[in-house]
Length: 195
Image 1 (cartoon, rainbow, N blue to C red):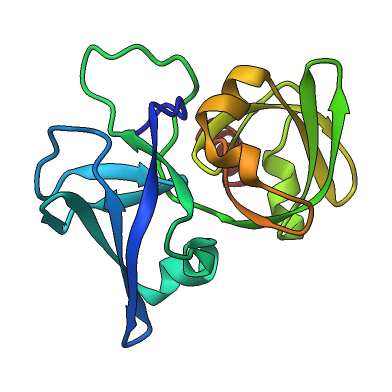
Image 2: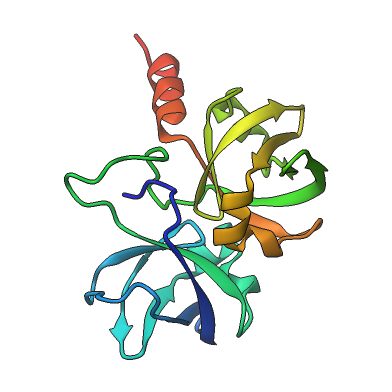
């Protein structure tokens, strides 16, 4: 489990595709990391497979189809966050690292000191999990939904988030990993299956 508060970014060092899956090596900017540990990479809960000067992960076809990890290139920057530990504060919101899908960035515009991102909702049924002023995870970053339209939603990115995450590299037409709020999912499920 994660909070969506990105502590570090890391450069992609190597990518290999094999048998429909992919292995990914990133620079170790976290310091002490253990084999088998869960780390969020662009919002994807990833298990540490190998350690040297880099951290290595392996992904299955389903993960690649739901996320933008297969679009990564050597030298790209990824957001990383170690998993939450007992006693840690939740500064963002509860993030599982189970990405629901990829959302296309439809527009980016400046507003005061922030940037407003309009992101396409990847499937019709995900709209029900978006709430005005509710939480959403974009590239592993905990953000607040500021507006919802028929097929898209809006988030405003403050200067601190732009400075310390890979969102500053995103452009119109790029795809970002989305995880919708788990509390909204549970609320919808309990309403749907209520006797």
